[in-house]
Amino acid sequence: MQPFHLAFPTANLEKTSAFMTDVIGASIGRTSERWVDFDFFGHQITSHLVDDMDEAAKNPVDGQQVPAFHFGIIMQWDDWQALADRVDAKGVPFEIGPYIRFAGEVGEQGTFFVREPGSNTALEFKTFRDFDQIFAT
Image (cartoon, rainbow, N blue to C red; front, side, top):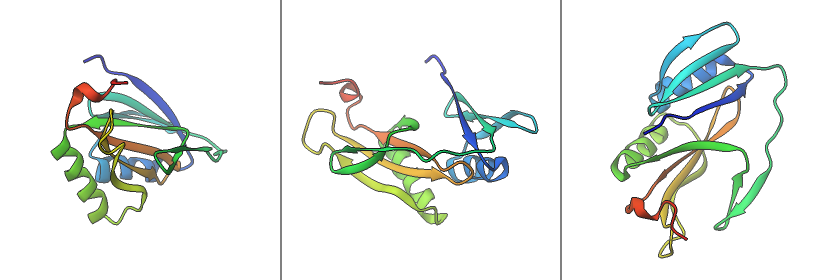
């Protein structure tokens, strides 16, 4: 695996850090007064403190209005279900609750979306019963 890096803005580093560690299970790496690095399932993501947050557009996908800007991870099925259960148990509202997208079609996948509360950035968590379907057409 080659780790990727992604940076996203936040209006509140404390809320972002608490959500990413307590709810998602990421660990904190390097920090400064204006940014925090997280180990996000083996990938480096960085949240930068900003003064302005823009609302993201949405796009229809399989009958749901999906946030156009989002990022996430593809997980093993049981890990995905465990994370969905943990998010729910912590009272975090789902932007789009756990469901099976493209049921019975090529690319069938489990998915859910949550918003990171410090930045309102959408995070998508996906799973496939068959990982060969990730790039299937």
